[in-house]
Image (tube, rainbow, N blue to C red; front, side, top):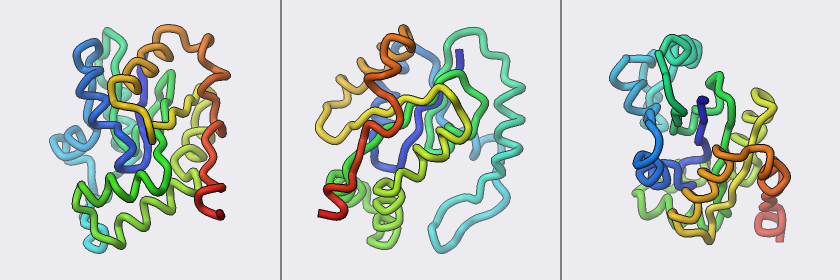
Length: 175
């Protein structure tokens, strides 16, 4: 089984995958993209690589995976996977987290707006019928890891509890 753990930067993907690595193989897409040169250049304004998503998808499809494997990264929902888990964080919490990570004000604002508008969730739902959504705003990382393990081991049992659209930031964003 292939699992995508995706979300806006700062929602907890990397932190939770450090815990999940004890149980499942985890492929960090940023490392894979770098190692395999699956990018076409640099976006100087955002200081990020421009990823060739078609080549990334083709590369992942060729991987010989024998066990449940997790793909971690904000592009993981583009991959052909069995389950997509979108991690979410409230805009106010995300602002704190991105500040601690040293994001510029412009880059933080862009990511906070993307989170407020559900950009990654919408993209995930457009690409997969098996999407789950977890609010990480007030959960510790161990709890988030436990919820992800629950979903992986019994997806149907948790379909309604973590259904797409269950997280709503409109009250925080629009007051």
